[in-house]
Length: 157
Image (cartoon, rainbow, N blue to C red; front, side, top):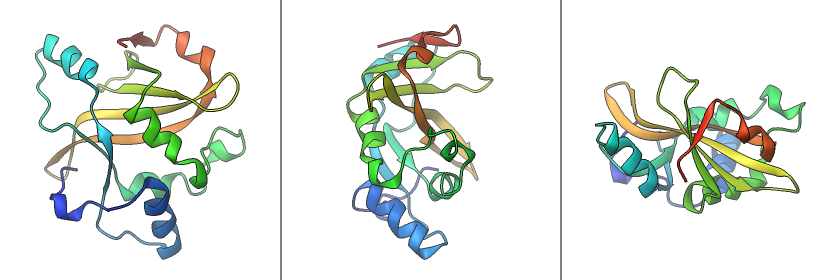
């Protein structure tokens, strides 16, 4: 969803999400929450993949997706007032993994949340939609830290 820099929301992810939910409809903007980590750039380069941009963005569809998500019942949804943890995961990750079980290339950033739990943010590099390409933070949630030790993840940082 590579957008013109002018269509980036200026503010925090919490502010962006709050405004969208209050409006109830999209505003045509995306928000930059960080940049692809150098370890991912290098991992992709080793596999012959070149990133078209370094910005990691969140689009309005992800915000609306989590408004009434089933994760809420399992306490795995991140409340809007804690969305700064999503930005922290991308800007200052505890670990970064490649999810090798997915058919599409995705990287998972983690960041400490509460005791023995982490925020998990899934980023799709070079994600293509409607002819645009971006590094899209498409999903996030709260998981037990030990869940990242499974076979589906390859730690790269």
